[in-house]
Length: 113
Length: 115
Image (cartoon, rainbow over all chains, first blue to last red):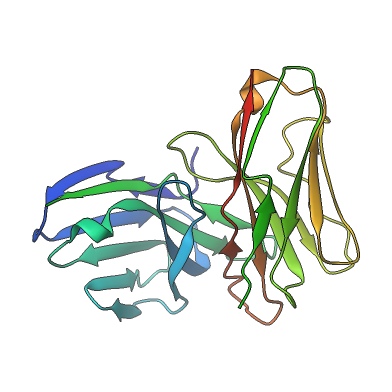
């Protein structure tokens, strides 16, 4: 059983469309992070959310941490081809081993011009 | 500033041979992680080093896998008697000790192909 479930697994959209990807768990996380990974490179940290209900914005990207700290979402407004990549959520489970960051399997986003 | 570096970037080896993968973390980062990523998949945790503490080896898939970290800096992941299922991208990440959320900074990875 995957501790962090990401959906959808694949997403192909046209430039200018909006999209939301989800990261869900039955466990509580003390913090949750979103990374983006491009082909041939390692994941790059986009944001960390630590407080239930927290919303963070990074240009056209909006991240939300669920009130119960069990889920998170990433919303992209007016997607651009440069947003293409694998989006990974990762979290530190509440009470879990320090430093053991649990990763979801990712959402592969393709934005066509 | 310098990020996490890994070498080699690509490694092709024959089944049964041993391989060593190297990771240089960001200076000052005391936490170091190894992950494995199969094609199009998420990250599989392998091992975690934090300062001088005993490493968390709970993710190593078999006793053919081992890792060490010398002087609290450079780390080497060794895979003995490689098998075809070991083919994957091996990612290293480091983390600053003061970051409670353990945000990780990744290297570009080593792509291992076992023929």
